[in-house]
Amino acid sequence: MSWWCSASRQTWTWAWKPYLGSFLIVGSIMALALWWNFWGRRSDEIEAARTTSGATTEIEGSSTGRTVAFGVAIVGLWAVIDWPLAALGAGYLATAQMTRQILMVMVVAPLMLFACPPALAVRVVGWGKGLTVLRWWSRPVVAVPLAAGSLLIANIPVVVVPLVQTPYGSFLMDGLWTLAGFTLWMPVQCPHPGVRRLTGAVAIMYLIGQSIVPVLPGFFMTWAYYPIYSTYELAPRVFAGFDAVNDQQAAAAILQVGGMVLLWIQISYRFLKWGYEQVALDRPLRKSVSDRGVAPS
Image (tube, rainbow, N blue to C red; front, side, top):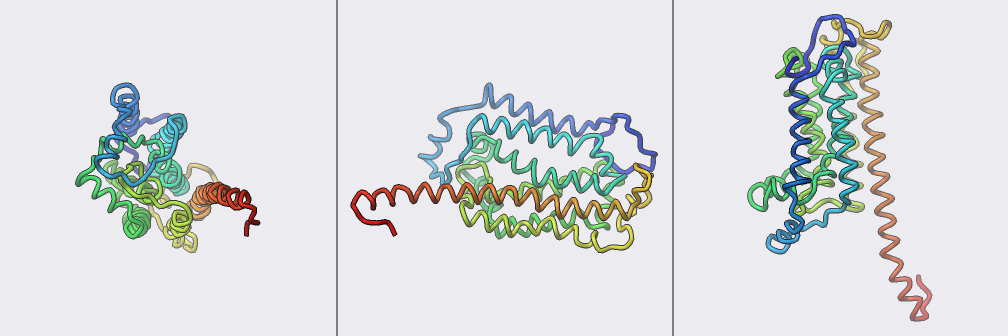
C-alpha cells in the first residue's frame, strides 16, 4: 500500500491499489463527525458565545441537511483522493486530474463547509486570534487572488510534472487545489458565526466573479497544439486511441465547462433563494398598505 498517488510508467491495470493517506484523511474526518455527534456537541454553545462575543452571522441549515451534505462530501472526497481516480490523475490522464480538481473545488469543499456545524467551528477556531485569521481569509479581496493563484499554480507544467513524480510532491499539489476550493467558498459559506458572510446580491456577484477561476488554468491547455505535461504525454495509454493531445483538450473542457456549470448551479440556487426572500419581505409591506386602503405602488 502506497502513501499517496504518484506518477508511474507501469502499464495501467484496474487492479485495486488503495492509498494509506486517503484512508487516514477520510477516517479522521469521519471519526471527528462521530465524536461530535455523540460526545462533542453542546446545544447551548453557540448562543452562549453569541451573547458574549458578538457573533455577526446567523448560520442557516438543518441537522438533516448537514448530515446529507456531509455524506455526499465524504464520498466525493474519497473518490477524489483514492484509487482509481487519484492514480489515473497522478500519472496517466489529465482528464482524471481535472475531474479530481473540479470535484474537490466545486463539490466537496462547499459541501464540507455547509456540513460543518457552527458550534464545531466555534470549538475549533474560537473567538480570539483564530477568528481574526478566519475573518481575514474570508475577505473577497483575499479569497479571489488566493483561490485563482492556487489553482493556477497547481496546473502549471513546471510545477505539476516534478511534483507528481513522488507521493509527497503529489500530496502537496493536491493540497494546493484543495486550498483553492475552500478559499473560493469561504466568503459565502464560512461556518463560523463570527464571520460576516456575503449574502444576497453581493454573494451572487462574488460567485460570478469567481467563475473565471476554472477558466484561467484551462486556457493554455485549450490552445496548445502539443502536450504540455510530459507526465501524461509519456504515460502508457489507458484507452486506445485517446492520445495525449485529446486527453489534454478534454481535460481543459472539464476544467472550464464543468467548473463553470457547477458554479452556476450554485449561483442560480442563490439567486432564486434571494429572489424568494425579497418577495417574502415585500408581502407584509403590500398587505399593510392595502389594509390602509391605499393601492400599492
